[in-house]
Length: 179
Ligand SMILES: Cc1cc2nc3c(=O)[nH]c(=O)nc-3n(C[C@H](O)[C@H](O)[C@H](O)COP(=O)(O)O)c2cc1C
Image 1 (cartoon, rainbow, N blue to C red):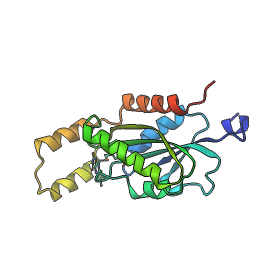
Image 2 (cartoon, rainbow, N blue to C red):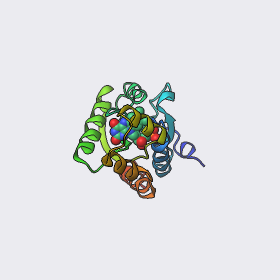
Image 3 (cartoon, protein in one colour):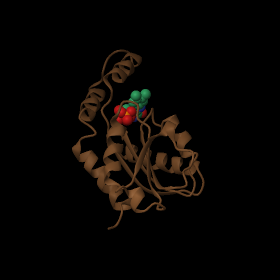
Image 4 (cartoon, rainbow, N blue to C red):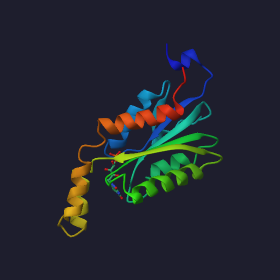
């Protein structure tokens, strides 16, 4: 029996994902698996009727220091929701600047709609797509600094199993069913 059959009128979690190269989608699936009854949709395919969903989790990637456009468009449609935000980025999520980015971007997204409340955030590394890395390198003059190379290598294996487990655990703790 599905969650919807057991509790037909209960609001259930909606996970809204923007993912260009797949990293955030992997994390979104892990979080979805941890929340009974949750539905996962792309930011570009948000359901017309959102009234049966709460909380809403927004999963996105760091796009030149911003939330991607499709995620901002989805966030504008939310009202009266408890919201969780998770994201992946090529940089180090432990850097103060990355933590600040996550906090301000999540607050900005939550504020785009009406009367929403930010409940929790989670940020981890995400592998930088080799094609994207090459294109960026060309734009930067063709050579790769030691710092950029170190950043690329550090992100290469992410999101890894620990990222997925942590993301799932954090949102299960905040939004998970309690039985
Ligand atoms: C166009 C583009 C811009 C990016 N800008 C940043 C950035 O400003 N900072 C950063 O840490 N990572 C940046 N990245 C890396 C991605 O945020 C990272 O690889 C992320 O995990 C991609 O998620 P996805 O696979 O779900 O699309 C960028 C990647 C792309 C493709």
